[in-house]
Length: 282
Image: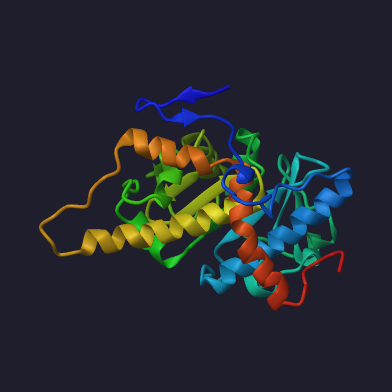
């Protein structure tokens, strides 16, 4: 079914196949006949996302975490332990956690995890059942922009992906070691893909780990560009994209398939550079 925006743009079917020309897009969402194969895939891509974050400098001591809901048991999720650099993450390092109880379900039980990460991720999964993956890190421009407690302006085509899909969480109460703040973030972010955590950092969610990770990378870059624009000492203010154009531009590409496809060049770069060391099936 096709709908239109206020300016009459046609809003029909979306997906990576719609943005390619001259052949099928090389990175469509995979389909699985086995849940075990799907689990292997998401754990490999989770490790790939960590390596992309490391290469982009999103690591900050023991802060930052990416997680993915388990395809076999959706009431559980996988995330990184403390003490292992993002650049060296492999599937055997990951910790499997029960969303409700916080119980560790695999051999990772002997590896400690970031308690604040547990509180944030488990509560988002608990209260937002559509979310399959969460990315959070204390990146440089994310931390800087978050200090202003404001949303990004629609000043370029790429940031339109966040049109009406971003929010600011202003109730910063220090390191989120209690469940309450994780629950507040979950409810404040309902229906949003990107959260600017005031005085804290950035958080994104997606239907795949690839989508959440790509959106995080884009959000960080968008914060950097916004800060550069705001710092320009000129009399002319930046042109803000009209709402109907921003709506259309975001709609065209912010579907899960296109977001998945957008992350694959970075993922494949990590596979090649590491010679596939984080692949289960190599």
